[in-house]
Length: 427
Ligand code: PMP
Image (tube, rainbow, N blue to C red; front, side, top):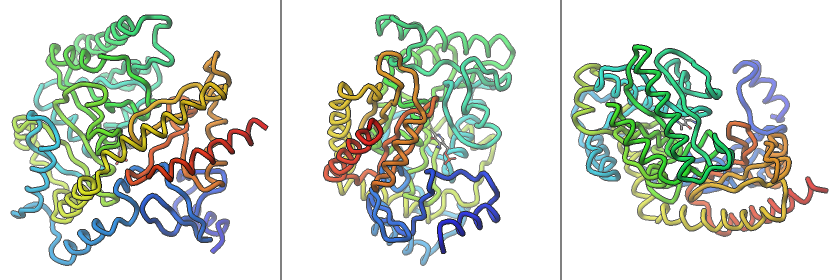
């Protein structure tokens, strides 16, 4: 089937407007490790997909999935050792305040659980989030997603400007003063909820502000923010859907930005493609949530989720993928930073571990975002066999977020393609 006829059938049967990457969409048929193969057999280095964190078609995960599905897979209202073992192992990846887990099937669902958990525990409804963020697609969490600066989506949600050094909310401040400026905005959001009758239940953030554009966060901001939230009687929710599972070279994004959450939400990479997400917190928070909601989710907390989730953790630990993420990511970022002084269109290079953003601008001095250049880069890189995309509040950040098995050799090949693409664009 040609790409054109598949496109036409897709539009016919999935509806027009279902999102697709690239000006010439990619028709892929197979994946292996950090590579994807198209219908013509061409190989692409996958530098975008974080869900297959231990690699596409990982044999250990495939084997665990098949074995469990061939043995037993039911809903969660029976005793089964696997899911208890998996929950225990997940809690051990955090500090002592994270004790119990509620499983679900998507980041959206797990964030909904987190919001409900916070609202039940505090008896308040108000949620503070950062502007420009994304926490999911249901009506509840969509209210927190994609907010423009100052936008008021509903009485129970207030946002504050996401913290960043590159385009700071107040220009020309020393970093410590900038922290205070962002904290003032956070306090304003909390006070707005306290005074409009909703009360303040929780702050939710992606711990590395990934969808906002992976900013460098002013040093110490998140630790102080967590203190302010707790002093106001609220809870701190860390959305680790993108930032968790060694993406940053550490297990959790909250280790990078330096705070201790009350509730941790994980998703995407947990099942290497099997829908699997979790909301983890203290036993007391989880007990209150369970007592009030009797939460049940048909496909969640199943023997299949447990077996696959365990296999993913086994591979990460066995193959040293956290260390790989830290080392390959650091080398890649350093190499991209080296290119910045030579190229006015590279405004900034940011990120940690295997999550790097290259901010494309009209020129380094004006910092005017250049989303069309980022899109052009992604399209041209794809033609050269490297899959990236664009992200951030302006859509001008080239987003590099490969499976954790991405190697130094893959990075070298990418850098050559990156240079060739820039040279091509700059003529
Ligand atoms: N939180 C964050 C930070 C995300 O990036 C996403 C998805 N991009 C979600 C939540 C929602 O996850 P899901 O698509 O699995 O519902």
